[in-house]
Length: 114
Image (cartoon, rainbow, N blue to C red):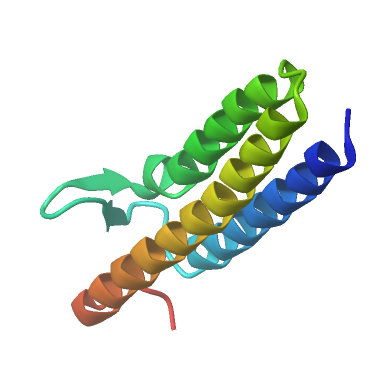
């Protein structure tokens, strides 16, 4: 375990915590029967749509962590750090943008709590 690996872990944990916090805030604004827009006209129930991106990000992070831990050369350590740090930020930003759009759609439909 190297410093770069630990630094990437910290960034990934921060990313997941931001995603989970935003998801919890959105969860509290919705009724249990709310159907959340996912892609285009697809809608899933709140219980599936909100935690799903966080779970998928966690799985992606674990796959990258496994790859990072099983490398031995310094050049690969730097590459994996850059990959993990960049993807953590990108995934969190995409999630926040999706959540913002979903909440705006639900707000326009009057499906959110006041």
